[in-house]
Length: 368
Ligand SMILES: NC(=O)c1ccc[n+]([C@@H]2O[C@H](COP(=O)([O-])OP(=O)(O)OC[C@H]3O[C@@H](n4cnc5c(N)ncnc54)[C@H](O)[C@@H]3O)[C@@H](O)[C@H]2O)c1
Ligand SMILES: O=C(O)C(=O)C[C@@H](O)[C@H](O)[C@H](O)COP(=O)(O)O
Ligand SMILES: [Zn+2]
Image 1 (spheres, rainbow, N blue to C red):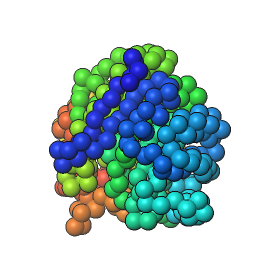
Image 2: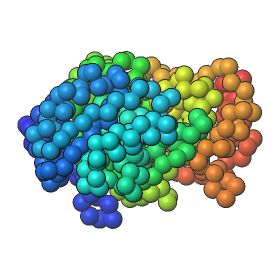
Image 3: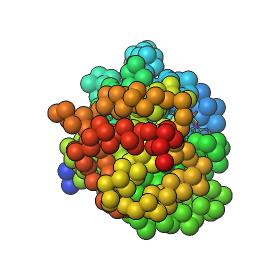
Image 4: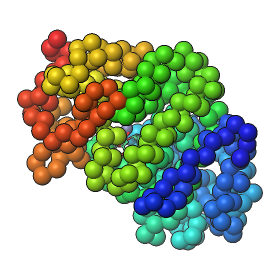
């Protein structure tokens, strides 16, 4: 491990499952992969059309130090390609290259590549191993950890998927230097979510350190990414397959996923999570759990990081209908994540259609 790196072990059912490695280059990747005992195995790097040209060669060179053969399969970038059709292309490549059960996949990219590659690994030959090499802020703090894999189906978010744990999560923080600003902000939505659901002090730190974070100060980034990985790790260790409190990570997502679908993926995932977070905070205020001032502080926190807290051009009834078609229905009632207070979220099953509509109209600017 290099001087500046960090390793966070993740446990499942009490036993070591995989490591989350935070580094500032790809130089330690070969050593980390070697520890997985993959000598003699093939590995396919799945990447996208924007990340591949930037980082696939470096990663391939590292993996060639430890694997028998390294192939690269490139998918088109963007949420619109997180589909079964794209998975089919990866299967075809693996069959052509004679990948067997002990060979591996490596997801090099953001959450789209990570979710899709993880799902391919979960289903090819009934399941092979995969590693996550996340390159967006969002994928480093959220999607690469916890084994939720899947694809969208008819624009319904993550409708087809599986829980399949990675064997390693290796992130090189310096790749954030090439990440477009809007994508960086999208990742901040999930990071702010971590503060809102679990740690008020962390949320305040994010408000205070905005300049250092957005200036890509490496110490600030390392502190923030490590803290967020720890929040996510704690939740997924406790409840790996979302039988209970893992649903807290869905704060902002219930309405957020509906906006994402209805806007035809024109908005980024984090932008929709920000809008959904504002709606969930508004509902928490409406129920008297947080004050109006606290609601404003939360929305301001989202806005200073360049995130939206509302939108226009959608029909409130359509948002309500789509919200109820996300995966969060449970025996006819909706699982909705509310704030008891900032830094303390809970799963509520009593939110009514009237309350949902009220919050939706609020984010659509149809009421004060
Ligand atoms: N599995 C989970 O637990 C989980 C958690 C959160 C989000 N998600 C999913 O993740 C997806 C969103 O992921 P995302 O925000 O990473 O989007 P993304 O994967 O679409 O990546 C965003 C864009 O940035 C580009 N990019 C990536 N890294 C780059 C870099 N270092 N430099 C320059 N360009 C780079 C990509 O090519 C892409 O165009 C959504 O599908 C969401 O549903 C999953
Ligand atoms: O890891 C989780 O659990 C999450 O909910 C993290 C979310 O940020 C992520 O967007 C996840 O993919 C949403 O899950 P879904 O089951 O609602 O599709
Ligand atoms: Zn998310």
